Image 1 (tube, rainbow, N blue to C red):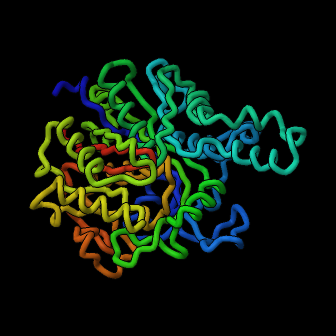
Image 2 (cartoon, rainbow, N blue to C red):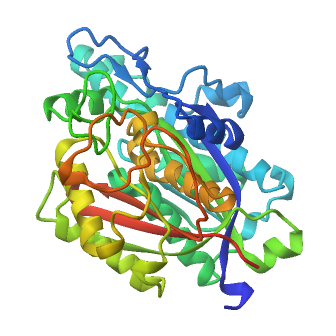
Image 3 (cartoon, rainbow, N blue to C red):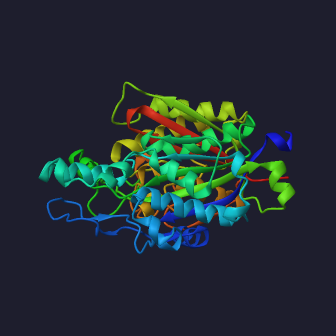
Length: 405
């Protein structure tokens, strides 16, 4: 394929519960570190769960001028920080960014945190207590707009509200825009601030564990909530080669499918379909995939469905392919989750190492796949698949390839 039609990843920025920045995040992930701790954002005494994957000690002023921080919601702060790290990692400075051909594409579930705060203030005191400045900060599209203003990007600007699959959607569409030559570079990923509304919602759905997330374990009790942001700097291969930049991996395609009739959980047919579509879109076989980064939430139904779908699609290879679940360490950062996992896939393809699924204790006959239990795995990875599924049936599978010139 012509170098002008290939899309590569040259910058990785991540803010997560286990570390800020590519290097710290990767070291922590490989060591099996847990970012699950006692919730500090709000009082959890009325709930059964008191733990989550919050990003501790995040100081937005390390990335954003102090005078501007107060005008940004936490999701925008996390997204700008991740974008700043990705830009730096790709060898750019803000003043040298190719702004006219730079797009910004960001996924989220809950949007900006001020909308949640406004609802609580309104419920308690009425309109008179609402700060007008917070109203302007509350729109979800502010996240991508604020990143674009930070980077002075003049290419396409999109916000994807496709819930827990949104990061993959953003990266996939960035890939499309570069392939079609609408833009040459993209900051693509996801951002999610820790949400009281989401915490209450998942509690009411009985979808949360009380102490730890155990994807694919027989005794798994549910997910843990998290937050964070990850941004990938994508660019055309010819431009990256011209700049003589290090390339982490190559995006070769993605698949999307929708089970719109199934609002609260994926189903085997839809999950199987999206992986099959991704393989077809990338013109590869199920025999070519070396590793799967699972959606792996730790809920009984979701893990069982994903494991069965993997067995359907990968047939005789299903038990041979390593399938890890980063949410065991990070919690579920919703709109940021698949973007953070895409960063991990790029690094796995670059360094031929897979982070573990931690907290795995008891095998489940219904999830009889190789989930890389508790210890990292060295393995040559030429092609990785990143799965993400969402309420409303929004399923996505992103395919990432080791870069070979």
